[in-house]
Length: 350
Image (cartoon, rainbow, N blue to C red; front, side):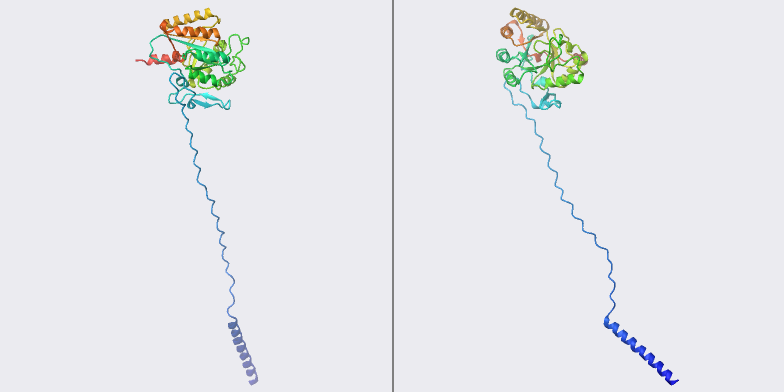
């Protein structure tokens, strides 16, 4: 029995020794390492947005330089403010009116004293630009009040136009309209024809309008042709006249006895003075023109081409005009408002 208790004592003694030794060992080893703490990874820094350059300053709008002043007694050169680019013919320029009231009809009219009380006679001379020698002679020998109709088929007419303005001649554009005897009489490969679709006629009109610049208006007189058949097609002619009016241009109807043009300011011709181009016939036509001016207050004559005989008789006639109680005026000075506008003015007149 004593031996059993003694063995049990030794067992517990060993347990105590082992426990104390283990504790000593653990204390010497130190605390167990803790597992690493999982922390959320920081998001990568966002790159800075690229610097946005400041908006570029808009280029300054180039001011349209006004034309230089022209000497008294001359006609103004083309004004850039009264021109716009053609979208149909690159590089071409079209006339235009502007909101402030400026228009080619006003800007390019030849000087004239509107207060002059004498009856007015005007001459529109066609065919300019087709015969260079005759055109130059007309420009330099006829009075500045004689107006010139320049052909759109003229080759590089700029030098002639500059000389004409310097001499005081106002410029009109001659339109190639289908004549009465077409195709026997042909107004050229850009003619406005009654058998063409409206879009083609409009394109051909724009072609003519871009041939040169600085004209006060247009006329259906192309040399000896007068566009009678096209003018008689009312819808087609109305398209043409509306286009001219919208661009601030005048129109002269070259058919003697035709009514005043509708829709656009202008007038008709009273006498064709060079059919036929014979001295005696020209003199008789000019005498008839004078009588019309005395009777009605104004008269407009048309000459088809600057032939030597025509220039000679016009020069002699113009010299004696003042002695006959008449004044030679540019064609623009005889222009009248369209009938509808004139009727409206009369209705609202107090």
